[in-house]
Image 1 (cartoon, rainbow, N blue to C red):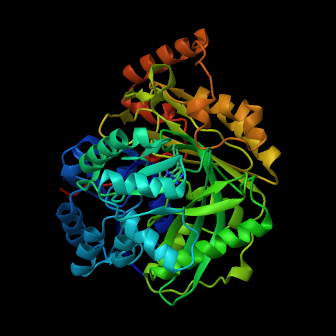
Image 2: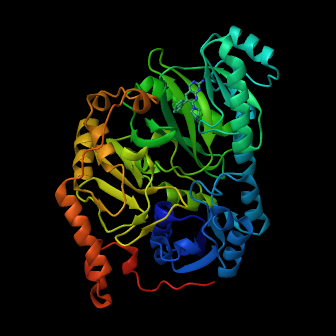
Image 3: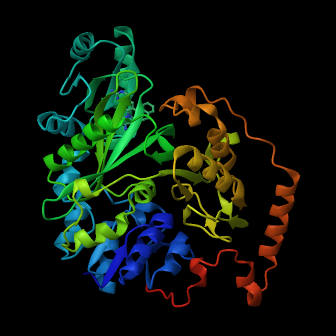
Length: 495
Ligand code: MV4
């Protein structure tokens, strides 16, 4: 087993991985940019290395600085978390070339799943259901002929990337030229590659993904589904497991398809196979595979009882994964809400500033993975995800009640957040009825943020003045979080 792991990430996922290392008795090395010098994840680790300036390309995306930090501190393995370098095949190869272990899938699997056209061909060959469509089309005429064969509406997609960039819905031949031109331009700007593919557009689809897990000895299982349809502009907001839409039969078929997809690329470690699901026909289609641990992994941990981050580390060290498919069960119901520093009243633009007060919800069946504490500075350099609130209960209605109570108990002053937005979605009958599809927030959720109550403004002012006037001798007494990484004593830094 590794003695020391470098976590090449920041904020909540860095702390989450460090917790897994701590339980396994593994020392941790944090890396941080100059802007994150005082960030909670830095204090949480035994050692810390400054890897560069605030801009991600100067620090968290800088392959040589990250690997140099691992060598300098004697770390034997690197966990990439999600985002940043987590799906960068060159990084995975550079880590191995440096004689270190990349805690994740083979670089070949990252590469195979990185190209949407190639991954679709591989999936079709593996018998995984893919959306009817065509790849390798060149001129406008070919796209229009293919669209006539498929049947409108069709979707033009970027072959080089996911996440909705370079994606255009086309409802008639007349719309095709402009759609192709704008999709090519956006894809070229986002991915440096303007190749496009065409698919039948599944209207008001649900986004359901299957967690897969494999070890280096050929064992591959699925850990059931996550329903991720509550999204806004391809940013997930609320995720849950099980999905209210899946029957045991569909779950079985979708899980088998996900395992087949992973096996087709020789996968091991944690991965997620994304599908779109059409509730009208109960058909599902492969979208893409995410070759990393995802933000929403805690809902799977809750319903399976597994610690996925620990198992990632253990199988990366060569341990066999001991559970076969028949050993795994999905029990109870889990929901995750993502708390973002963004302003719903201001077009969901990111909000920055100092956290004047952050009180996390507690109680039975509540987990909070957060990257901030009272006093943290939220900057413009990084993803605005502040924390994830995850609840677990015996069934979906109980989980919804628990999440609504947890959100009501959450206190956040200093930056604007989507807390009220989350509450409003949880309160909607469409959520309780499981009717929220991937376009619902943008097309059907007419919501206006409430005026901030006077006492909230007063609390913020008082909290702010307490922070500004705090006496170092009583600094820790204002800290509401007994688990705060600020409490840990031994943190020291290198570099
Ligand atoms: C689709 C689709 C419907 N039909 N493909 C979104 C980004 C990437 N993950 C692929 N995505 C989709 N592909 C076909 N053929 C629906 C989505 C989709 C989506 C589309 C528009 C707006 C929001 C969306 C959220 C999730 C999935």
